[in-house]
Image 1 (cartoon, rainbow, N blue to C red):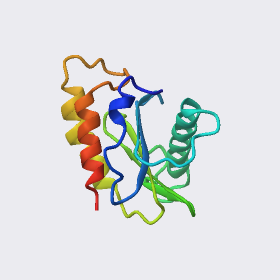
Image 2: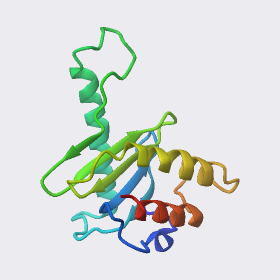
Image 3: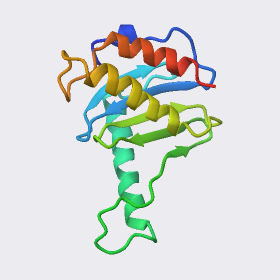
Length: 160
């Protein structure tokens, strides 16, 4: 799961909103990118297994929200209500499903506010502009763009 640019993705500084780490997945659950800012404890079974667990949770939560939505009509293909984050005593998991199937998961301190706008910015202004428009990028491949890593670091480091 770890892209080749991982050394370029190490943080320059810890952001004001403590963002611990971020995963980006494609619609099939393949990890396209992992970026870490502050992760005090390493995953017990490695990052690849951690990525599978995070994607599985996002997938299951989305399906759960669709199934229990009281406003969803029978046969309705719309997703209905969508969860945007879940929180525990020690972290908050924020997530965004893009129109193209890219899923972003940000893990932050539990007191972090709504980060939907920040994740949309990451998707629209960083991923779409720097990765998808890069002629060397092959869709579905791990993201190896150093500019993306650098700008992601700069943007997340400036979150209030």
